[in-house]
Length: 392
Image (cartoon, rainbow, N blue to C red; front, side, top):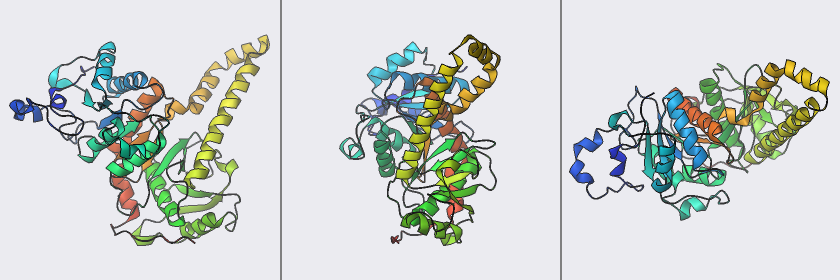
């Protein structure tokens, strides 16, 4: 493995982009160093800017997972946070400093958003660790952002720091559900609770782009989550969204393979590849699935340990049980992708540990490498100005 550490290029710049005294003396030598102060070359793995201070177990688990991602997958990392806390952790993980061979950098950010803080915190703390990470992407010094902090604060900060893609009114949060034979994408799961029907059509385009890029599905089937399979079922939002999804996409967008309405029991059936809904309904559905999976896992463990015969049976089926556990393990999927912005953003679970952090960093790097933003632009059609979306 290549040695990793913090290059001199970062030391000459603060979180706000101001140069420290003495940086001028380094002159052109500073710009020759790889890292957040230089734009990543096309031949290099994407540089993922990580909010090292976001999450219930930050910064320890976040740094551990980031270092593992650098070592296992060769991903370049920019850790945004308090250097006094991050540098000792890097030393603990035997991250050393060898100049141009570095893969991990520290970008100073003295403020951090708490897990209980919402969208307004992004305005109160413009130099927070998540804001600095987003700023790296905006400047072209990183290609993706990963954070395990407060979802509301991350979405608000990302919208503030990163411009929406042309044609995108609001971004959407997308998560992968463990269906077979192909995974199912659910969006929105919390970015906007009260969208207009036209936004659900945009969400469908975002989801199709994700399914094509990340899952390799050539023609993803799109379903609208509501309370019945018939077109007229649901509230005003669902009925109007069904009409728009069944019609030709507006503004020259690529056509959608709309399969109609789906219900709650279709979430894990694999009936469609992309399920579209509003952020309120999607978040409730996701949390319900997580709670149900956790309950089923606990009941299964109790049943398998209830008797000697059950324990012997579990031993004989340990391979299948291990595979099932991996499929249902949320940390193995990386997290939710915030789609529709000029940059890749992945939000991990707030309680994520090191392994989940590694998966989230890999997901962010893979999406950036696959050109998810370019795919979304392609699906939405030619750029156009803003327009007023009327409610039904």
